[in-house]
Length: 141
Image (cartoon, rainbow, N blue to C red; front, side, top):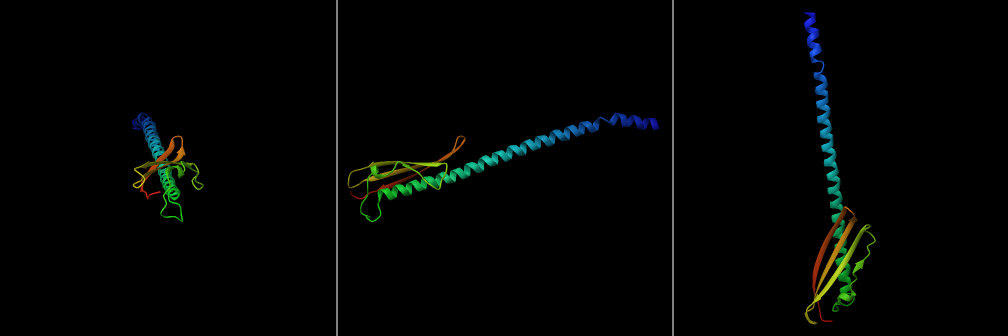
């Protein structure tokens, strides 16, 4: 009887190795999947933050442009597109730029101005662009 027992132990000694290799393989695949999920979450978060910053940069560009079109102190005066800056440097938004486009339509008494502000934040692979647009119906110059 002793002999049967030792034969069965010898025949089963390799199965633990197979189970151990299987467990190591499954665990490494799970670890790789979790690393990939974490990396995609980092990219998503980066794009969300840059997108929000670009939106605020574009919004600031519109506000600065409207202040240039309608100077404080003279509410009846509306200036022209030549008075609107095309590039604005913003101190609080490092790594972000804003470009302004201004187009005038209509005659002197029915002037309409379209302002487009394009905010860009980030660089390289992680660059986000947001655009805002405003139409202004002007007063006579």
